[in-house]
Length: 324
Length: 212
Image 1 (cartoon, rainbow over the protein chains, first blue to last red):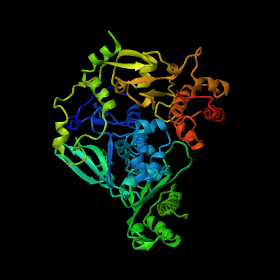
Image 2 (image 1 turned 90 degrees about the horizontal axis):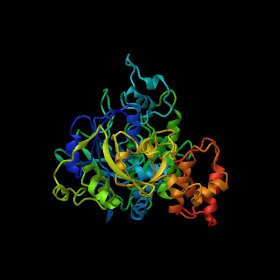
Image 3 (image 1 turned 120 degrees about the horizontal axis):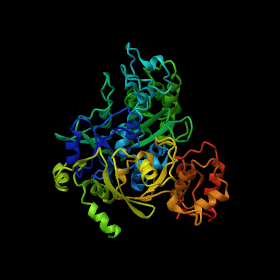
Image 4 (image 1 turned 180 degrees about the vertical axis):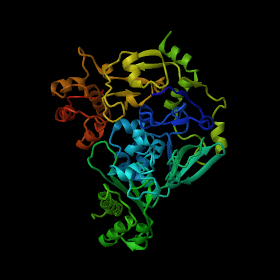
């Protein structure tokens, strides 16, 4: 790793002040950032260590509202009986990070804001992986794990384990910055960059994700990840669903795909298919088909379209407690 | 000077203070997620911390029960600091990217990848490596069971597996098959000695091994 400075703020305000300076990056669990620094994919002048900032980690369940601090580790969240009982799908999403070491180190904020796994990005070709002549290395090259919902030149996939579920639940991110606090839907944390140097998140310099909040009451939700193997790896495709409504009919359904596009892909049409409907094998299949409407797979990832259908079908089945 | 006195002396430095505070912080700061920024700010002091490094920074941490004090650059990982500076070479440097588990150590009792933690982040904390579990003359139950079950071939992943196994058994003294897979899922053995390692852990169900 190249040399860098290190500052350990004692408050969120101090962290924000330090992060405003160019070349400063927030250090959470470090499991992603340190690898990027070792590989010289990212460079920093100073790391702002969040580990010792009091109050950034913790879990509160207040009525149906679940609040989780950004520095809460995945294992701490997994071990919180109240949170898991209120939102069993959380256990599935966390267990997908199939390493106790990563669960003990990795944080909720770090999971949400980890950098893409795109191998062109990881080899130093940038998030958009454009060659000198402007052609896409992704479309020309090996894109087996890339987006089936690319946005412009952004063809990597969002790798977060928690984001699809949080987006399906309509969770909010709480961000502190130089201008104070702002709240935004978790999906608004993400964007598809279109120019070299742009990031895939919407945080401005000095802004810090301090936590997430989700109303977990009364919604039936589930996560289904399709994996090559059960061992430590990112899934090939993931679906998260959240169903609202009492009785057999679904009033509202939110269906979100992970590992499908540069941002968590909200499959609006698939949710609409289920609105006011009972979940049956037929309506579930129709929703699964709707979820991949508009998919634009590339030369090597057409298989992911079918994985997305399957993931949606099985996530819906889990949420409804039925075998599909 | 006792270890405690040394620690409190150093704890006035911002980098160590932060390490200790992390271990103590409980719930969410008042108001942090509820929109009351004033309450969150009031819970803290205002003085901004110094930026240390990129040159060596003096830190103190506990390694296998002994207090160790050294000066490291912030960029030095816990793994490299242990191996190259403190001559604690049980944790192995294999992938160095947080995927293989050969560098697994316990930090305040929790299994972590030492390659993916900056040593400065472990200041004020307690590290246990495979050497700290037991010695060839007085092996930890898990180490003894690895020997008895022939649960190693080239041996390079073994120190990490032993530490991860001890951490698993501390959490689940008689783990289910699922708990074994989840508990050791962060370690790889390229020789494929998984059968022997599984025998080590399953032996624990019969009371033969404890994570103690």
